[in-house]
Every structure is written in C-alpha cells, then in structure tokens.
Amino acid sequence: MSYFTIEDIKQANASIGHHFFEPGTLRFFDGRVLDFTAGGYFVTSERYRDYTNGHAEPRFYTLRHADDTGAVNTIGRFQQYRSRETALRACDAIGSGAAILCPDCDRYGHPQGENINTENGMEICETCAGRGIVKKERVK
Image 1: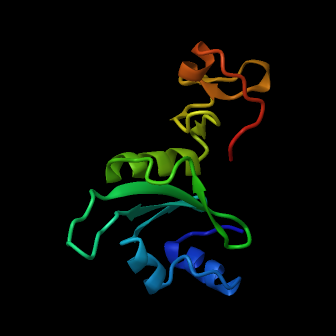
Image 2 (image 1 turned 135 degrees about the vertical axis):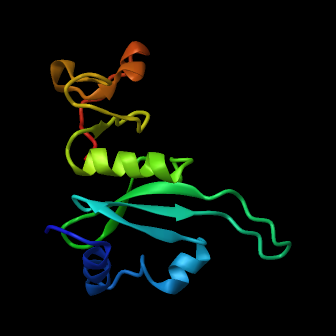
C-alpha cells in the first residue's frame, strides 16, 4: 500500500486495531510524530520524563515504517537519531530508495557503494566490512 501522508498511515494503523498513534500512547512516551513521510517511512520523537520530580531527558528521534497492513515497525534502533534534521535526512534517503541500512550497525549509506559494501550480495557499511562482519540479508 502507498502512503502519501501521515494521516494515511494513522488511518491504516487504526483500521487494524493498533494504537500507535492514539493520544494516550504518544503521551506515555512523550512522543510526537513528525509530519513527513517518504515511501511509508516517517519519524517520531520521544523522551523520557520522570513525572515524580519533573526531570525530562533530551528528545531523540526514531525512524519508523508502516507496512502494507498499517503496522508500524522501528527501523534501526529506538531513538537512534540525536537531531530532527538527521532523522529526516535518513527518512528521506531510505524512503526514496537512495540509501539502505547496514543490518549490523544501523548506519545508512548509498547502495552504489559509497558507504555500503555490496560484495557477494551482502550490504553492510564499510566500517562493519572493515571489522570483518558478515551479514547476508538486507534490512528493508
């Protein structure tokens, strides 16, 4: 299924009975959904807040993907990105097909080999290739 807006993703998620975008869920994680999507990929931000003493950790960003059913999956690591701008660049690059994720370290790079080693059908970043890490499957 093609999603053109965050609203499309929210409707698909609700239609399968999931609660990812419900106000209570977002409030629990002090979460926000950024109003940008690329190929079903989008960015959320979350931060830990201790309501007993008012302390709040910094806000970090997570790359997400809505599959064809409307289920939302985390791409890479939860709160992987420290800035909104970096998360949005990753979302745009991966969502447009201009980049892929390394299945070992979750870095993203260009499939033409600038940052990703594609020898023998393996797609891992050059850092992981230099460490001798071997992965055979591509993270979508």
